[in-house]
Every structure is written in structure tokens, then in C-alpha cells.
Length: 296
Image 1 (cartoon, rainbow, N blue to C red):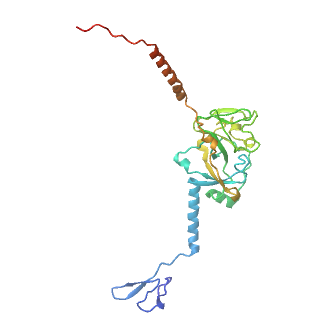
Image 2: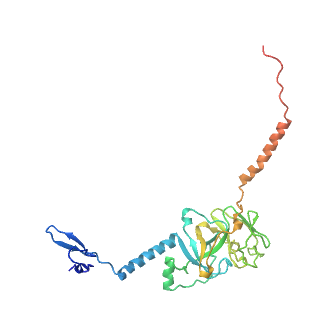
Image 3: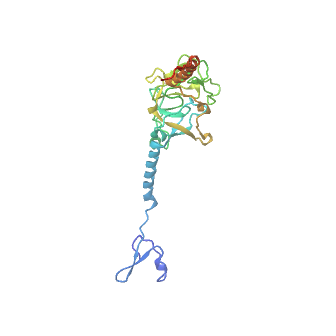
């Protein structure tokens, strides 16, 4: 008989035949002993280990790679609807990447933008799933908007639009149908701002229903969002399945929107002037006449 817990069917085979699961080893006195195979763990004993590994992986993914967020309002319609779940890329900021124009980004409340907004109290299960990133966290004070201007940009709205970045008009098909790109009001709808270093200017796609950078110009950041407050870029609408889609940067942001540096503008203006002056001097200068005498 094999030892307790070993798996063996060797007794069913004649001498010299394969003993199945047990291996045979020879001892010094010529006797043959069976070496039992290690007993396998039961599924129920392994289950807590598997759950622990899954939780650790989920927490690492949430912290460094991707996190799910729930859309709480209509401020990003029709790009995003209330109740949508989006996946946010948190990896690229770890490599020094900063938000770009046109991206839809999630960011921590920069200066009390959500003050007075109700916060849902999660149940224990929702709290745990939110903590590990398997569900959007109901406690995090985060917002989601589209990046319009980055450091050095001048963003401007006059009348009903179009919205301009560094003097160039944006074609914005993502703006909510029936809305104008700019809002005609005295509380922030008309503006001209320059984005400082380390900040971004954000706006919702539902322009007439979004309390974004325009309406927080009196806060400590003058309506800007610190880059350090950005959690990551929303890349996919993951839920519900009927709403699944990616969130690419609109084509209007592919045009060269960069602000020209003052030094570059000065150099560009100076070059034609210098060339013109040089040509004029060459045209008016008399040729030199060498002496006719010969050296002795």
C-alpha cells in the first residue's frame, strides 16, 4: 500500500509494468520503495490565495494603469452621457506625458468646483470594489472635461463663437446639438485668457450646461486646472455595451495651434528687413577705382 494521501494504482499492474502515478526507486538493499506524489491542494484552500492575488493585481492596475469612472452629469453630452462608465489611462502620466488639446481628461476638484454637490454614500460592497478599482469610487471628488488650452495658449470666446485658440477658430462637431461654441453671458461666457505654465483650460461639450473653467475664473487658479490634478485621459466608454466607443482627439486640434514665441516673431520680422537693407546698400554703393600708377 502507498503512504496516506498518495495517488497510486500500481497494485492493478503486474510486476515490471508501469506503476502509473508512483515512481519506483531502488534502495541499497535491493528493495523497491514507492515515492508518493505530493498531495494537491483542494480548490477551497486555493481559492483565498487566488482571490488575494486578484485583489492585488486589481489594485495595482487601478493605481498605475487604468481606472473606471462614472459620468455624474450631462456636462459632456453628447460625447458622454450621465451614467456612462469610462476607462481612464493613468499610465502615460507616469512617463511625464501632459494633457494635450482635445483630450477628455479626469481631474481632481482643483478649487471647490463641486462644493455643494451631493455625494452618494456607497454601501460596503461598493466601497471595497471602488477601492480596488473594479467600480467607480463614489467618494472621489473628480470631474471630467475636454482640454481646450495648454500652457502658453490664448483661449478666446466672443459672441456665440467660434471658440479660438491662439487666434485660430476651432470647428467643434462634438458640441451638444443646439448649443453655440461660446455662451453670451456676463458670468464667464465671454473671455480671453492665457494659460500659464503647469495649467490647462477645460470646457464641457455641453457648453450651455457645464460649469467649467469659464465659471471659476475667480478661484485661486483663475479657472485653470493644475496639471498635477489630472488623473488621466479617458480613452474608452466601456459601459453600457450599447455605448461602447473610443474617445479620440477631434481633427480640429490637428491644425497648428501652437502660439508663436515673441522671439521667433521678432526674428521672422527682422530677416526681411535686414535683407532689404543689404540690397539697398549694394545697389547704391560706388565701385572702388584702383590707382593707375605703378610701383617703382
